[in-house]
Structures are given as C-alpha cells and as structure tokens.
Amino acid sequence: MEAWPARARTSCSSTSSVPTSFTGRFLALVRDGVQDGPETLTLGDLHVHLRRRLAAHDLPAPNRRGTDTADRHPFTRSPGTLPTARLESRSGVVR
Image 1 (cartoon, helix red, strand yellow):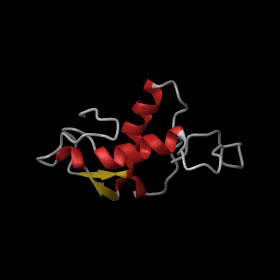
Image 2 (cartoon, rainbow, N blue to C red):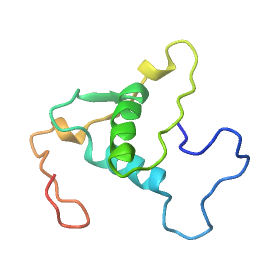
Image 3 (cartoon, rainbow, N blue to C red):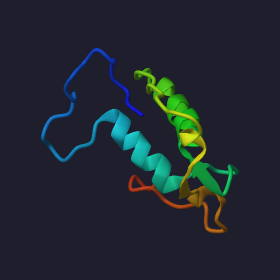
Image 4 (cartoon, rainbow, N blue to C red):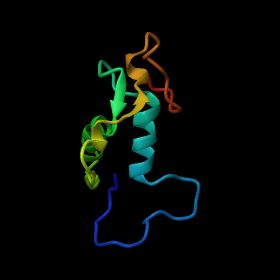
C-alpha cells in the first residue's frame, strides 16, 4: 500500500523519526487493530480501514496493488478482538 501519487518516484518523508501520515496511521491500525473486527487482519482488511482513517483527515487514499490473492493473506492478529481490546494509545485516549 502507498498513499502518494503513482507518478512520484521518491518518498515524501524526510529523514526524521516522525512517520508520514500514511505510515503513522498504518502502524496505529496494526497496533490497535479493528474493534469488533476479524481476529486476523489481512492486507485487504488493513487497506479498507486505512482508507477510511486517511479520508477522515482529508489525506490521500492509499493505492492498492496486488496479484491473485495476496490481499487475503493474514498479516497480523487484531488486538481489537482480544479481551483487553480497550487499550490506551500513546495519547492516553481509550479506543
């Protein structure tokens, strides 16, 4: 997945340790999971939820590239389905 125009050839990120808007939201999604979602998140699941999160902040939609069934491959477990799903993020907000 990527969230910058396909015609661009270099990353828009600087060399700082602060992630891009796309990367930050992707990492938060993997870390926090999807509340009441599937136990295992596929790349396709992540794309759907990441697209919504980016759109909510008026950020570019991620591009989706894949072959055959790559988007159905389990990528990670969703912490949002675990009994302790109400985890606090770094900002202290309960999700």
